[in-house]
Length: 283
Image (cartoon, rainbow, N blue to C red; front, side, top):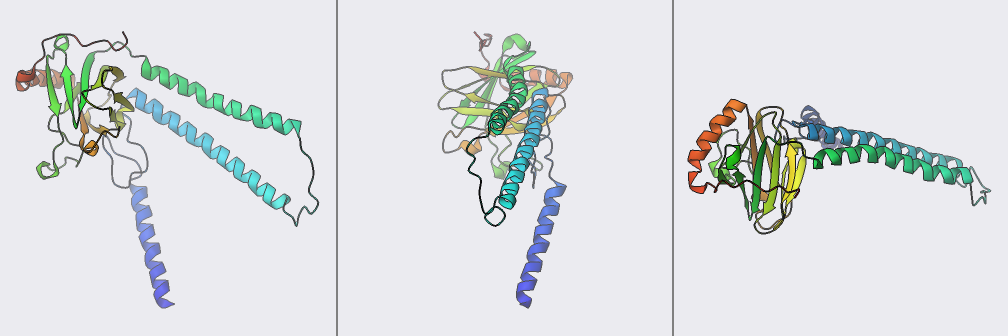
């Protein structure tokens, strides 16, 4: 008995420590996951904020529905069990209830549909872009192309940095040897395609995922509102090294972006493009 009590006490202490740790780090950091994270990463784009707000609204609606159904079950169990209700009713229809359980779900779906359609529109209707970047998925790495007519004229590959080569502060499985660099508060149009199988480009803090499909050009947009480094991964099961296909985006000031463009032209000179403009995925 004593040993059992000691075991129970240890288990309760361990559970308390775990709960405390989870509570202390329930909110994710900026740009990457954290230990004991139980919520989404902090949003750094308007689309990401809108998505998280919609998610929160859905959680409140779902919670209300679950509590309502639970209350109905409790009422049925208490009022209509065999002991409390020995002679059950033989009622087969109730017009008011049938109308209610048809109309109320429709109203709930409308309450969900309106902000959902608004969010979809904001995602798919791309505003006038300041920068266009094309990314191509390969097995298993990403390549990026900056068009010449927007100050670029080069392309590069971004491969994972293996654990043995990581520097202090670089997250495992998320760091790449070359990073995507964009200026803050600028509309970036990202075009995606694939050279082999279906991949998917997604960064949680930016609030979207876009499939990279062979023979097809998809596009999405984002506008990062604060400087920093934001990490993501391929979100489509694409083969043996699917888990080793990270994405690394660095948002910088306009001045730093101009400096990086100058340096990148020299660094990636051997892979410079012919200067042609990138295609418009809407055409």
